[in-house]
Length: 211
Image (cartoon, rainbow, N blue to C red; front, top):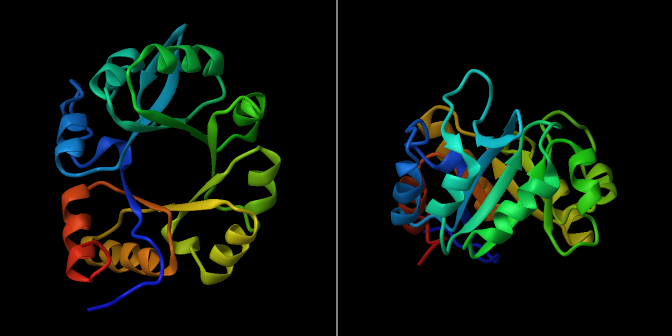
């Protein structure tokens, strides 16, 4: 059994978890029942409405207001997917909801900067930036969301020096994903995003990462 000197990572239901294609937000219930610590919602703008949709090729899931209502009492990661999102409208909807806590994340630093200093926890996401910490710091983020394959001991150390919490993501073929996620947990990930919350909890228990 493996051990790690770090606290066990939080488990984030990526796109709400493995039933994310459901259009009625039932996947949120599934993610919470499976033991997710955080539920991720992908936010886009459709006219004046804020909706939940990962990308233009994936299923439209519904309006953000309804998704937040389903997340009552939960910790939520709001991943802003396009620059057209009215960030102040987003905050209003969250504050009117009964979520326990929330994080606003984005690939776009311009989305995050207006919120700096306002008390909102911010997360900067990246895929291909060679040095992601400077833009994360410049955007006021205290979380950095990176692909599993870019999660390295060197990046972990640099983030610790900047008091930035690392949250890797990446879902590939099952066995490769398991190995990658376990490696990130052993290296000290603060949270790990996954489609299958229940399975990740099981394999982390098997490895002694979760009790």
